[in-house]
Length: 139
Image 1 (tube, rainbow, N blue to C red):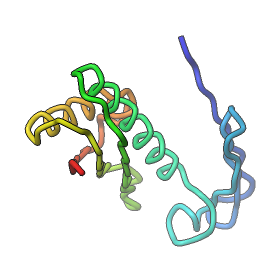
Image 2: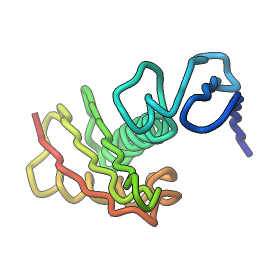
Image 3: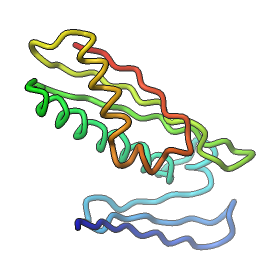
């Protein structure tokens, strides 16, 4: 069974501290802070990393689903916007937008498979506590 890892280190108190996050693969390591999470500071934040995971997982899941149904996608571009409620500290929504170029598919089949991919994506499943919306466009 595949496993993945990541790590984070935080130094100091919440508002004036700082930290680093890194992926176990070494593909990314960078800073994060209170300002990068709750304001407009430099660095990443957990919600941005969750968005990257959702967008990446969804794009792969959708491409696979299209392929399994006999369509060959030329491209699938997904973006996930993750909203953190600063008062409750809950991730409330994940707004997923996808644009895909898929020859020979009609709009109804495209939308149906796009929604099935949202439901079947492993990261979407783990984010089930948030309201996940989907806006899918056939290019």
